[in-house]
Image (cartoon, rainbow, N blue to C red; front, side, top):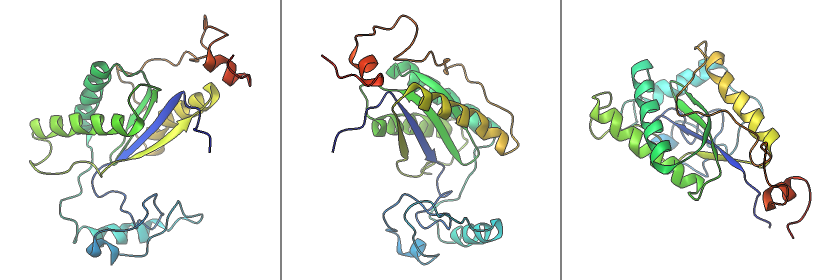
Length: 214
């Protein structure tokens, strides 16, 4: 199978305990390793076509609160700003190019341009710095995991896909009746690698135009 052609990644991860492997909405997890959590309900791989009512989801997580090792904590405004500061530090230190970011009460969305780091390494770095910063600021107890382990990645293979994902992320806060977010580490998308002044003979440009590199 050919490797996917990637120009950017859509990175997503959740706060600890907010999307369990057997979440009634379905999940990308392959199974449930913790027996206590497994007793909460059946596992479904992938997003369910018919989502459960909010009452059922609330009941699931009320029961989950009794078996989770740590408290489920949401990202209130002060914590969200702290996470944003940590993301900015990491973006600058790693020289990532970030095109979109939304920090919601229970999860984070980012679009980051292709980089020498793999998507999994990006998520690990961003989680590590933000976890340390939240703990150091006293916004999370020492030893609290802060984030669910790992995250999800979407491969974006065309400027149009990047633009659609940016728009989706920018609209995400308003769906939860929160204000739109702007962060200093987010830069406008210039259409890379088909940005103004690009080299039309580059492998990226040829691939995106349906041509094979020479």
